[in-house]
Amino acid sequence: MAIHVLNGGQFAAVRSQFMSKTILPGSPLLACGVSVDGKLVSAFAYLPPKFDPACAYLMSDFPVSWTRYRRLAKLIVMAAASREAQLLLQRSLSSG
Image (cartoon, rainbow, N blue to C red; front, side, top):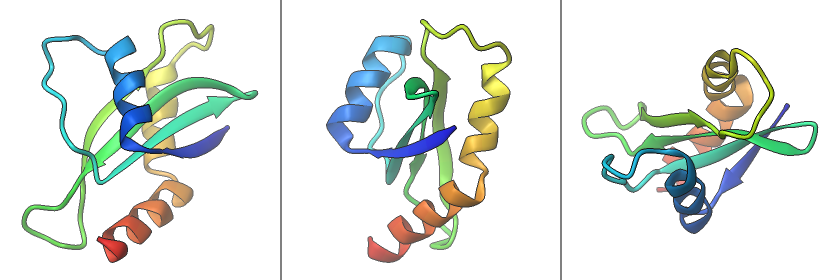
């Protein structure tokens, strides 16, 4: 499993493919894709903090539809809560 930082355009493209069109898009502080064996299996993104500058809100987490992996929702949450994702988030919070 690997976590890849996505820019706004990349996240918007993945989001528009796999999430409902009725969900309004937000502007993420940090967006990431998760790959397994070199293939994108999910994405997640954090909103910038509103009240506590040291905390961010997980705004979106979703699997891609073409994966064969079961229980993917658990993998997405584990990736978003991983040490690697937390370090990426801390960098985003400190540079913003």
